Structure formats: structure tokens, C-alpha cells
Amino acid sequence: MSTLTETRRPIQPGTRLWEETGLITFSLTTGAAFALQVMHPSVGAVVGEHSVFRTDAVGRARRSIASVMTWVYGGQDALSEADRLRTMHAPLTTTAPDGVRHRALASGPWAWILLTAPYAYSTGARYFSRHPLTPADAEAFYAELRQLMRNLHVAEKEIPPTYTAYQAKFDDMLANTLVAHPTVYEFLHASRRIPPPPALPAALRPLWRAATALPGRVQHFVTVGTLPEPARQILGLTWTDRDERRLRRLGRVVATVVPLLPERLRYFPIAYEARRVERAKGALRRALDRRPR
Image 1 (cartoon, one colour):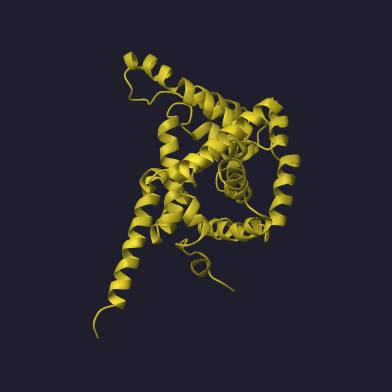
Image 2 (cartoon, rainbow, N blue to C red):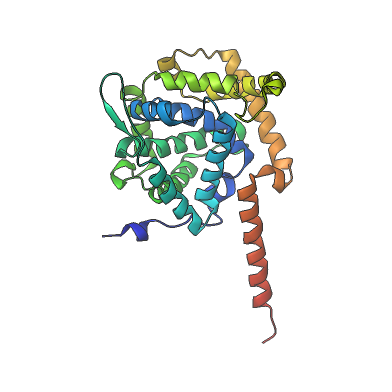
């Protein structure tokens, strides 16, 4: 039987996770992923009581993205980051109005956080990439995500063995588990009207609201548009054919422009630095291989 140490290992350069997670387009489907997460009754209850997304949405988003980048690009630090998250979430519990006790580290809810990732990746590729996932791509990519789930201490029993099995589980969660939790609506409101950083002086808050009005509208639009239709139905969100056409036009612009950006701008900082270091290590290896003997 494999030990935990043997089954947990850093994500390696050359994988699709390494190539694509760090792209700035990653952030375009994080809203839908988070909405799906807090539609789970336990996740919604715990996040609703303990998260700061209502008061420090920007800070929370920056910390979350940095954590995900560390999962993929951090090497051994990726496993330490996963351990840190488990320790941080261990004391987080809450009791819902119906008397049900919810724990952040309960096996199913903890797994659901990571199980939204394959949906977010495939949806991001469909809308915001010139190369949507083929069935073979999706299966290979899901195998990489299974490793990421193990690194994050998701119980093996909660990880579907294939992408096809994952899709069946995802559909079952939509049909039988996810709900219109109040935390989802609070999150959607915060995504539409981005709250100012807590330290921002009151005199500057009108300027903040003016500056974030358009990004907030776009963020909310993309979040609603990249949710699966059954989730929109559960939440009572309207999405028209015209909305879909607008989202696809936006996606084509993103898919055309982002690949043209310099690498430093295409990738989040942690991802860019990891890729730069990996190239430097490769250059050193080649120089060593060419040294006089």
C-alpha cells in the first residue's frame, strides 16, 4: 500500500498544469468555481461564517491565487502550502440554522473544493483559449488534477478515477447536493460591486467604486456565464442567447490577445518566476553537458 508521502509529489514542469495554471486567464473562471463551492451546504455555511470575501474581496482573491500558484509551481513548498491550508482550516466549524454541524475539513466538502477545478479548467479552455480540451486532453489533464488533489489531502475515495467518472459525479452533485445557499448570493453581490480594501480611507471610497464599476460588471457577467446551466437554474440566474454570444465574443478577444503578451504579463508572478528559474536550470544543465572533458 502506498504511503501518503509516496502519493504526494510536486507538479512537474512540462505538464499541462504547469503550462496553463499560471496564465492570467486562470482568474476568469475562479468566480464560477467559488460559486459552485459555496453552493455546497457545508462549504457555504463555513465560508459564510469565516471568510472575509465581503469585506476584503481583493485581498482574499490575491491570497487565494497565490496559494493556487504555489500548489503548482512551488516544488516542495507546494506540499508545505497544502499542509498549511489543512492546519488553517482545521478549527473552522459552524452550525447551520437547521442545527446541522459543518466542518471545513469534512471529507466530502473538502474534496468538492478541488473537484470544481476540472470544470473550471475545461470551461476556461472552451471560452478563453484557442485550444479547447479534446476528450483525450480532458482525460490526461484530469490525471494531473488527481495528483493535485492528493497533494491537497483529498481522500482517495473522493477522487473519481477517470474524467468520465468525474463528469458523472459533478452532474450528481448539481442534481442532488448543491443548493441556493445565501453565501452564493453574497459572493455574487461582492463580485458585482467589489468592496474596497479595509485600509482604504473613506474619502477615497467613491473613487474606488467608480474605478471598479466596469471590472465588477465584467467579473459578474463572466462568473454567471461560466456557471453550468443547472447551477444557474438552482440560483434563479437568467442567461440568454444574447448573453452567451457576448461571452463568446469576449472569449475570442481574450484568446487572441493573451498569447501575444510577453510572458511576464501572460503569467502570474509566481508562475513566471518558476518558469524563468526552470529555464535557467535547463541552460545550466546544457552548459554542464557541453563542458570540456
